[in-house]
Amino acid sequence: MRISEFIIIFFFYGFIGWCWESFLCSSVEYDGVLNRGFFLGPYCPIYGIGAILSYLALKNIDSNLFIFIYSATICCSVEYVIGYVLERFFHQRWWDYKDYPFQIHRRVCLYGMIIFGSANILIVKHITPMLLFFLEVADNDIIHALAVSISMIFVMDSLVTVNKLLNGFDILIRVYDYFGEKNERYFNYINESDRLMNLKMMAEQRDIKGKFESFNENLKVREENMKKLNYEKIKNLFYDN
Figure (cartoon, rainbow, N blue to C red):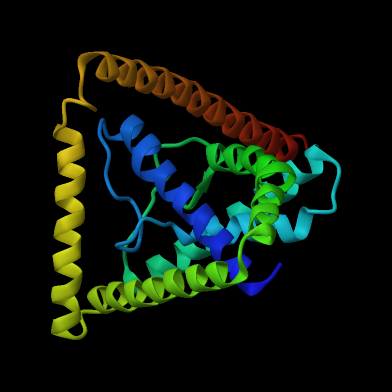
């Protein structure tokens, strides 16, 4: 994989992850859509990192079960580490699984493991090989120019975002606030638009959310029962001795 291909594929999966978080997940959890990315731009780098690591590690593996287990472990580990780093250095949480069953320190959860494992079967076996094929037959100059352009945008976005979080240079903070306001207006427009908030879609959204919450509660009950069962086994072990 050439460096330009690596960059484009990284941002492709980062964009897919951003769409997943900002539209699908947000519509279920918050009854609307919102920018849930760390940066101003439409990408979540954590998804790009996880997808590329999974592909590089598993591209020669035939077993879907092994891909599922290994990629779920990789992606959850990346999610946990990045979540810890963001909390440690910026004292903020960009995601929080406290309301989800089978979670670890609110940074990873069972749902994420299942989604990452299933998605990476598609990523390793189908989507990434297809992307690499199209990038191979595309013009090298175009691929290189595209990779350089999106890399420059990402670097500038990173500088502006980190500067904002660290309360650094005023001029960069003003740049962040300007584009942040543009982002907020865009998502407010989408949420208030009749194209999105028609009655049928709202009803379907509430139905999906209700089913999700019901399933989530059932999993929480099972988690609590498992904890109680383990506690009773440990207590009986010491009592018998």
